[in-house]
Image (cartoon, rainbow, N blue to C red; front, side, top):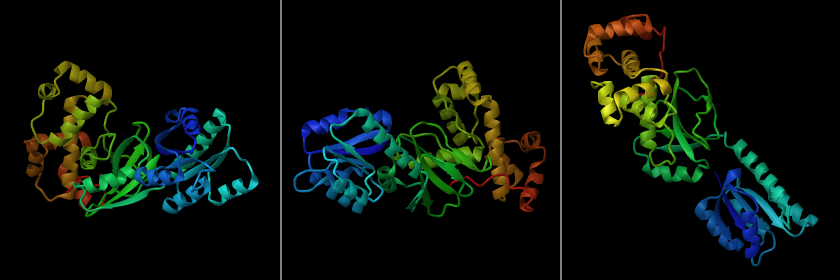
Length: 354
């Protein structure tokens, strides 16, 4: 949702502008109404609006002056003029201060609706350009969240991790420069919980679950890290994705269908059916897959022995680990490590957060 401020010194006109079209259906949230340009400036400073619809002739400060002041504070703000006057000089000044539209009174719903559509299209097109936010600690982002929240315009948010800067077709993208992090990290905002298209080889990037706010940035980073290390994508089903995340966090431990069913307060048979339907895999196969994917990461990026890796990834038996690895990847763990060391293969980026 884009934040919108309505400004008119006549209360009836202000109410009429608010009610003439369904703003929320068109992608706008009315962040405030103001009966004067001075109050509008204070309101703009508080809510950091994306769009301002303002009357021209108001006491003390005109709509043109208001637009000029707003453009000084935030040049990318889209401003539309609403006026009963359609004279050339007013239109010229509106263009001079880069007003997005000029709507004349009495207002017609279709004209206002079309103006809103054009402004939203301009904002959407601009949203593909990444915004850079530097942060000090990837797992302590509380101070950063409030700043990011002022920038975001859409309801749903997720984190993407990648081995390098990929091309992402996202409504809004905020790059997070995390101190000491080797991965490309970005926050994506969208109107719907639909992962964006990304121009990168599958397996070289990972998404977190979707969230409605930025207060859980650290959790989102962990979710994306778990998905990257485990080599999977989260299901659209909330229960299945929660189980996937739990397994990705606890794959080192002894996991069973019955134990997971007890933890999530559902029957084992229902959990098995639900998981298979919404992830195209069985729970047991998924657990093994996450363990093997993490084993690949340790073989490539650590010097631990095979026994240590088997223990750390929940196999607890080097022989079973070796057989499972061969069955999945068509080669032994030793051969895989050797090929990585010689530069013959690079399985995926190290998504593990340190």
